[in-house]
Amino acid sequence: MRFADATTPLWTCPHCGHRFVTSNSWHSCSKHKLEDHFKDKPARVRKLFDAWSDFVLQFGEVTVIPQKTRISFQVRVRFAGAVIRKNWVECAFWLKRQVKDERFHRVEKITARDYIYYFRLTDESQLDKTMKEYLREAYQVGCQVKRV
View 1 (cartoon, rainbow, N blue to C red):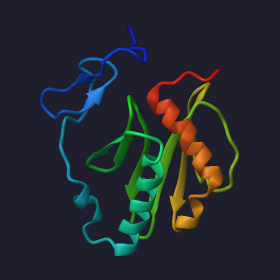
View 2 (spheres, rainbow, N blue to C red; view 1 turned 135 degrees about the horizontal axis):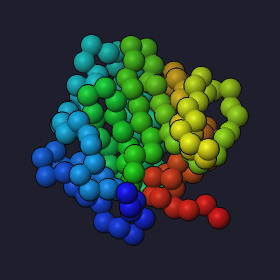
View 3 (tube, rainbow, N blue to C red; view 1 turned 90 degrees about the vertical axis):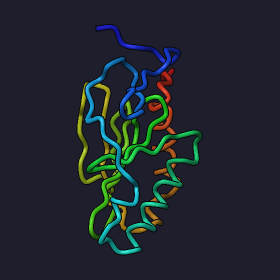
């Protein structure tokens, strides 16, 4: 299988409109509304998500993709996301390196150089300078920018 590089145009599913790096990528092919994630949730949780979304969007153009069980953020590829919980927002992002930070309650090692970091956003103060640097790097992963 040949994978696209950062200059190859994205393939758009003709049914749902979602964009992918490779053509005919398997996906759920569904459309969901952002508002559906906040039904029966406290207003405070929506405020936390909005803070996370603004935090992710500060680096440039990003597509917000509401899915059935999560909300993804995409530049060329999906690089960050959120799952709305009853009392917090489960945030995640993709880095091409390992980092240590006590805020991460889970780290998935996808490949030798790909890690997904998860943390529970319970207070906007967690979105600090260090987290901003992680997200800046994750945004570059989403752009498919190669680190030098």
